[in-house]
Amino acid sequence: MQRIISDYPKHIVTNNAGPQRDTASPLAAIENQTKPESAITFTLATTPVVTLAHFIPVSKQVLADSPMLEAYINGRLSYGLALKEETQILKGLGTGGEYSGIQTNATAYVPESPQLTNEIDILRDAITQAQVAEYSPNMLVVNPVDWDSIQRRKVGSSDDRYVYGDPNSSWASTAIWGLTPVISNSQTAGTFLLGDSTGAMVFDRQQSSVEISYEDSTNFQKNMATIRAELRGCVVVFRTEAFISGSL
Image: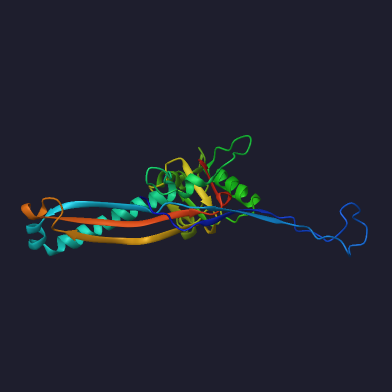
């Protein structure tokens, strides 16, 4: 049975804030009039707590003869687990025991017409889409290949100046449109995700841990050991409108 986190609220806000007045006769007296009523519609949702894990078998003799090897294996297993968690947080499908990733739940980017072709323009347009929805993007995730294309874009075929700026400037490698990008192979090339990070939260039910067993399967007979790394967690997207995802 898959465990779930406690119910959490998703909500839709209808903001009708405004002046106190007679809407049928705006120039009439403003006293003794009904004030505007807004609404917040809450729905309860749940998300499964997912176990991410992997293991490798090693011989007991190797561990005894090379104490540093165990520490190295532990480090590599933990690192591999962190890479997988990053991918799940970003784009887990929410089915088959996977996280329900932020990008999976994000609002689709609606291209400007005529459709933009420059990655820099597309990202600015997506920021505008989020801002129109009353969110302030503070994060961006792109693939290294796309970030390379953005940084190496030239002004023109006969003009070797970089569109993005001077490669010798420190800011040129750390921000675009005010957003510091996360450059990750977990992101699919040609796809971006940006948005307001307050719209989602990662829950760690069990942080990454590494354990060793000499009794797994036939380990005792064969002088083998099993080293396992695992964690349990999930990601919750409270507001899908807070995130925009699309193609570059």
